[in-house]
Length: 268
Length: 260
Image 1 (spheres, each protein chain N blue to C red):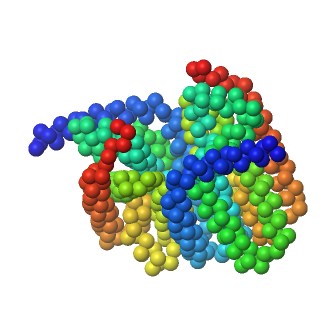
Image 2: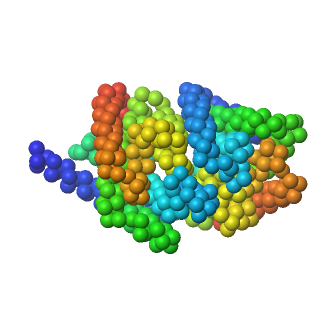
């Protein structure tokens, strides 16, 4: 059992290295995609104009700056394209190739994503730090909040990855699973707080939204960075994250085994 | 007339290849409807906190979101399907197949593929604009005509920027998906230019004319269009079309084909 685990881990590490070098080759491409990720910073400018050096919904100038810098960070660190990879490989039968390899496809997909993330994270951190230093909001960040933020980021990544994985697996049943991408993306942007911080909503709406996976993956980590939550809220946030990771993983593995029975390896 | 005939042929071709995915139309319709409900809810919640956004009221913002939805629909069903493969065509030399045809290459490329099942967004966008005009009490034939006119100019500018970013493929063969930048422009243009700080307003009006793409049509719908804004809209549209045309021809000269 342990030996098998160890072997899978070694293979996973090799795949990680492989995908890192692939990402390095296409680094110019990654830079282009990152330009698209700067949109939250445009929202920051709008909110700063609205606040106009005052306080809106309990947020002052430095709260807004840190909030949207945090949004940028979380969005970039949890960017996932597994929906497209899965959809294509199931439709074209390329999944057979992944099935032949000695570790499960989900681990291969995760190696692809983590490999690219390792290369991207220094750039994301640099942009984030540059923003923090230039605007002078650094004093609001504490060591505790950075530590909690890092943990919540892992939870956020697992939620987003599993969510998109579930959607991608629908390709076993329907011709074009990526048709759902725009919907999920807008749910994610609007209910996660990328455009409007969830704290701006009426209290009841805000409460309801914070139980959704979108808020758990975006709003919650950023709130930890802002350091505005009390111990009870932090506990609740991590519980919601854990619950979604478990639920989505269960749905994912159910879909996976059911889908595999239908898989006909078209064209391969 | 020759151009129109070709356009119809491209349309027919696209329809035929899209018929297979007709279930997608339903999915898209559901997607769009949910998105709009969500959007209106979010916008209402937003105005719960603030009275105006850069001087725009809730109903005026709705018109702007409608315009953004039309543009998004146009990317999904026209610009992206037709132009995103340009970089691959340049790298692999597939562009030969377009160049040998006795048609203008820019025209042939620009309308090469249309995904009609993504069209619901466009209609819903128009619906939202009309609804907001009704709410604002500006729903008159003249305002609708003004709106359509300025929307045409906005689309011309947007098309030009999209084409120009795709044309960069001739210069940067290692990079795909430069069009993604245009997508982010649309995201930024979802909000009134006046809601941004001063320096951004200048950039968004004179450097990257987002103001004329999304704001001016929405102003026309709200009956707020001034004559100088309108004239500026025409000038910018003509300039954008001319410049992107020039850039296309200039870049085409660099094309060296690949294997053939």
